[in-house]
Image (cartoon, rainbow over all chains, first blue to last red; front, side, top):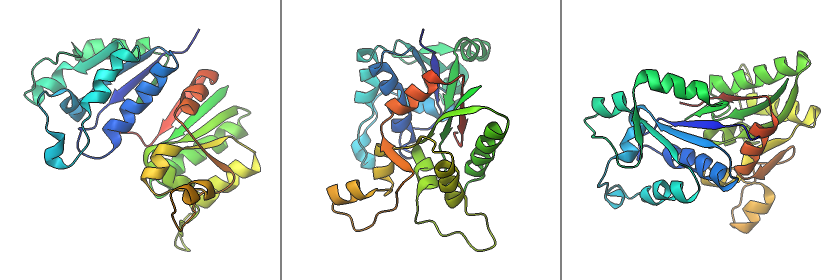
Length: 116
Length: 130
């Protein structure tokens, strides 16, 4: 049986290539049909904020990568509810909010974890 | 135990040196290293163009010698490397760039190699993440 991997995405979407590169790990894992989970934590939750205008900061839109998660079989997508609240963001449509205790359980449930 | 090691930081970062020390210790302890995978700024840890000051550790050279000496599978993510100007001869020719700063023992490949290593190892150990 395949080992499961949780990828924790902590970088804001427009602070450099990290957000995109972290999603690329998730999508690559999905392409290999591996059991992958994705947790948006800290500034990473900004990736889930609606109505972002990537062009205004001369960047490429990340929303296509986020929308591709489902196509790549990545159904386990979570967001830290504390990180969302701290940043004044409402519950995102595409990620399940988890409190701190649930995040601890989540990390425990996966065989491997990558935090970027 | 079988280890897969992922490095996300450049050679001048403490975490790259820690990764090297961990890999050496794992080997000395009789463990196996299935693959070393360099991603994000970790691709700079494989660059052959780094010149360390004489009174400082040359971590990029030490990585190169460590991987060569043990014939490890040292994989540098091609997309992350291209973005950061870490090119082997083939990519420098393909993109018509004048400089080559990646050579043996390193291989350029894709993220599938990270997942493959994580699947075949008992432990995936990451250095230099957020």
